Image 1: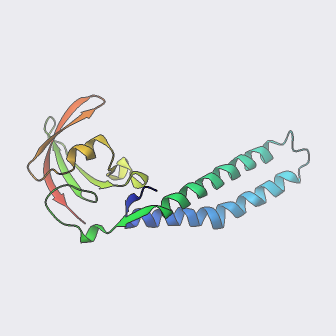
Image 2 (image 1 turned 45 degrees about the vertical axis):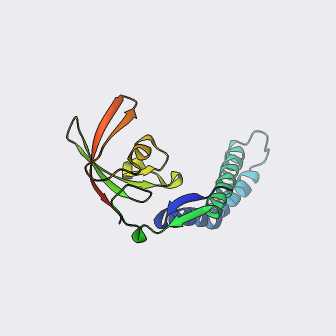
Image 3 (image 1 turned 180 degrees about the vertical axis):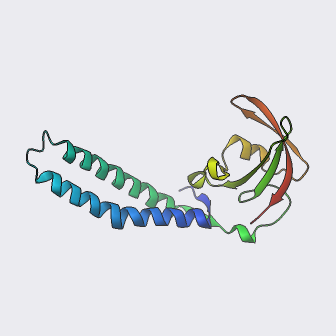
Length: 157
């Protein structure tokens, strides 16, 4: 079984979601199914079918989360250091074309969220950044064409 690298906060978020699904969502969907059953004929009962579909989604997500938690390789970012980019690093980049500054943290696939500045270790930009240091230039193939970035800062926090 392949381990899944993730940060401590990412691991805690998975555990919290699993807890919510098991202790709140499951009970709510069981009650919704019981209520829909009380309405009579199940073959034409849209509420019943919707509740059963949601129950199926919840159970699938619970299994997925349990698998990810079981294979998690939690890495403590506070114990990492160095000047080169690796998992857990927060990297400040400057777009060489627009001079726009961007900040990313390199995290595991399951906790990536580009809107929050967390990019997946397997993303094209993260793969291009791994091993680079302050002052290095990287070129990343993007959907709109190749982009060049300069690494301004590498930190572990």
